[in-house]
Length: 181
Image (cartoon, rainbow, N blue to C red; front, side, top):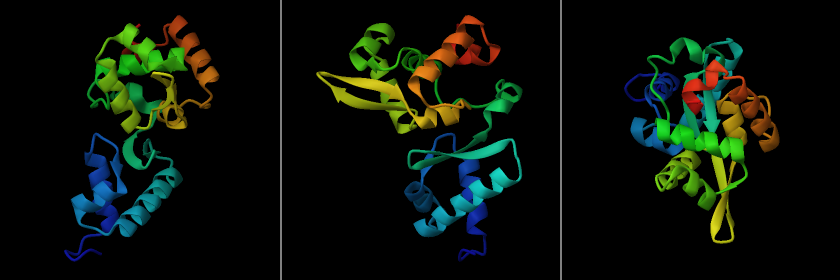
């Protein structure tokens, strides 16, 4: 219990539930004034609890940040009123990266325009893409967190391109809002 008599795990759960953005242990600790070691243990316990009870809710680790969300299998039931982690422009930029990876940032900018630089920064912060220096540009690919976030079985870029390409061609309704095809 914290000094106010509240269960730290419940406090951490409330913070994760309320945040639309992934949060680091340090940020949760600052917000709650709970020791970071206690926050880390609470998150691990919560992840185990949500996995054990076969819930439609999960806590994802994205890089060194955590996000509570509805599992991808249940997105279609909540998409009309759920907040988006990304605006439509960022979603479209991510779709181009996923479908054309590996892609140079300079090529992405020609496709998506200058706003893509901000989108790429946000996507890196979410842990959905990675970038590495390649000449004067940066080479962009999706991460294993991208696959986990979207409920894909593989994080292999080739398989992601293939899966998404097939879904785009078949006009998969679950991708309509993401890709706007």
